[in-house]
Amino acid sequence: MAKSSKLVAAKRGRILLVRRRRDQLWMFPGGRRRGRETEKDCLRREIREELPKLKLGRLKLWKEVKAKNPKSGRKMSDAIFIASEASGHLAIGDKKEIDKAMWRKPRGIRLTPTSRYIRDKLFPKRG
Image 1 (cartoon, rainbow, N blue to C red):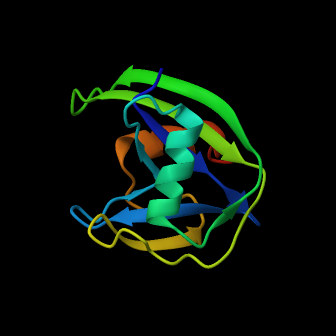
Image 2 (cartoon, one colour):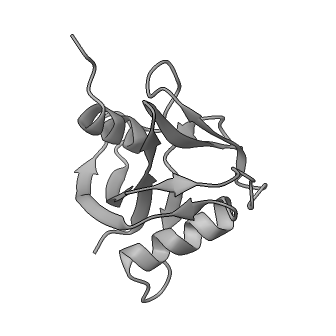
């Protein structure tokens, strides 16, 4: 079972990203599992905490990523879920952790390593 869960939501060529306050890096919303939570329960809780007004459609597990970041040595252990639909105001719930949320094009932005991996797999560059 993965240690963290991440949400991938896309609409009209844009993806939903949140910015971490501590290092100003952008990432797909989500976070660490607690106790006996399932990966999907973890994601739903994290979204309620980070973006409380966001409404999600059905969540489908895309992939479980278990890898080691070649640059930092950090181990990735993430369950990546794709939302069939996402709507609502992007109000920030956890202002200590997240300082911004937006729908934007997936390129030209500083992403965390895990989010970069997800972006490159799901939204590859077009020739």
